[in-house]
Image 1 (spheres, rainbow, N blue to C red):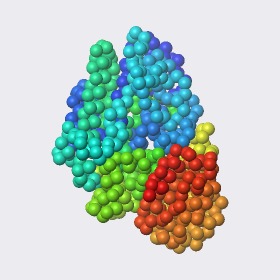
Image 2 (image 1 turned 30 degrees about the vertical axis):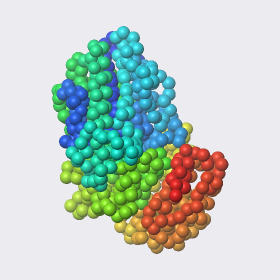
Image 3 (image 1 turned 90 degrees about the vertical axis):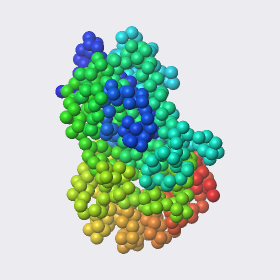
Image 4 (image 1 turned 120 degrees about the vertical axis):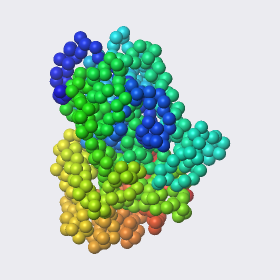
Length: 614
């Protein structure tokens, strides 16, 4: 039986019992920015990773492990808290503010430490939440389990940056002069990528990084063996989220969420695994589950405030794990690039809900476009040299997408309009909408509103606004209905006294596009006179997307009047969208556009550096 209690309740009982018993050690070996597709152990087109394969032979390979977020800070915060980020306010990458955890909850290593574990982190954190006291005995580039007391159990968390996105920020000169060990001509490209020397070289270079990472993983295994603790230790290898070729990191496709996971099971503690060594497990596990799994393996209670549940340990059976077939994903702001996308995978089907489908996937993010492959992909699109599949990344998305992953692993054939899948679509749509309401999902409010009003207790703020958030979800989902069916409800939203109902009513108009032209007169009035700045911007955005009005006067006034860096950044996202789409809207923006209090904010500067590049 899995024990779940409020933090602190029964903890002293559990600890007193465990001091008298032996406990397993835990090691997490985490490679940065790689999905399961780059390891041959998981995908036939991946690189050979003999040391990780050796782990699998002595443990469990989980075929369906998912990061809940496709980017580092959000994924790592999910890992360390066991909580869905949009519920607790940690969903934005990177944080503009650190937020507190829900009342009474601590990051899970603190519970291990209270129970006598030596906890170490080497060394990346990147949390979007306030860490709190007592999480790590040591967190540094030199942190090691070797500094613990004799016989003291340990948890060691180590990151491997060799596979990070930055490894592909090479120059054209480097590409010309530095060959890859992997033969680029033997690489199999994803069908959405153009087949060019740049893309082939980028793939080859990344496969080299994967092999280097595998050797580094092996070195830690050798250290554990040399210290005589390997067979006392559960060793987890996994990616910290997907990535890192274009259309992976930052996106809710399988390439952004589906991570490799291998758990080496120690001989001494094999009775705590749900299956014998060398077993491949089909059940779904997500990052929310990882912390609860370690607590359960250690015999500690799992806090009630977390969203995950254990997949290893006493009472967890193979049948139980294999019965799990759902994974929830979320993508919000990635650096200066705003979006709002949610996903639900259930079995072989994947449902993706784009709440602002006019924000095409390839919208500018300065860090992404340091990669030559990204820059080349956009240039080829602008030159009309891509096929329909390769062009999808730079075109308006559907508000909802349904993929059958067994037949379409690259998620390039949207089945949302196929009558044969209508029942599946309706089921997953309902499940995802219910999930977002039940959290509730704080991203139905703009980040600037959360920064202003929810910063002290985001999770509690969400609970106290649960009814309002559910109403906003319903307004947002009006774009999934035929326009004639949704007309009256959209009209009601546009005339609402609630600014965020009006806000989502306008976004829904933009999702419906030309079908919503009957609302142009009221939207024009909102663009000039609505009391809420961001509502005026969304109104101007709709009118510009339909080619009705020039948005510059409304948007420039909003940029000049705001005193919020996060609000300015959201407005600038609209500027970049309207400038980079066709037909193009022109904006005369400089540093002097902004009030001095926000002029030098990091993400404002990032947008300025791009917008003034010409």
